[in-house]
Length: 247
Image (cartoon, rainbow, N blue to C red; front, side):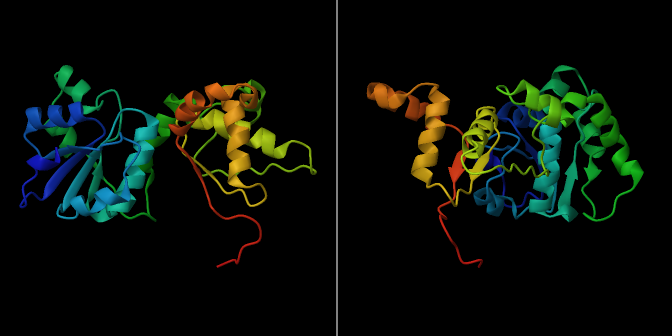
């Protein structure tokens, strides 16, 4: 939707999908854009394109992950100029709202101001608390497909939490953590490895073997096929290795 934006446009609705942007424009005539990578990714390279707008309403989706992303994006874009459409039965994503015959203009007017990041009242939290009670499974985090017993212990992988795994040398920490991370990565959880002890080539080899679930050194003709699939995962590696200056 970027080519349709005029230089004098000061208000914008940011959506997660092209069809949502089209639905908003059709129903309300407001200036709207769709994020190119969906509702959970706002690449820094896009920020300059959004500088001209004095008011931005984020209407990203209808699930908990989209709501968390909207709050994060508001901090990136400046809380003072952002408003958020809270997901709910009466406020689904724009295309669904249009299909249901809901008043999209009314929903936009009811958008919540992102406000000051350090001060909230229960009135602002009320709907969010209700959302957590309704979406118990989503709040529990992303569950592991390969580790059902781990789901019983940790419930899931959640934003903002730190888990520490310890054990003696040779106990299988790296093997387990690479499998643990790969399980989540295959479900779309963006993963960054900072491996100071094991170099990236060896670590990537371990993870690729786990991903393929077979010994590729015995079937090298399959390497490119599995490597292409592995390359599509949202997986990244830091280049630091060994002892590093703290700066």
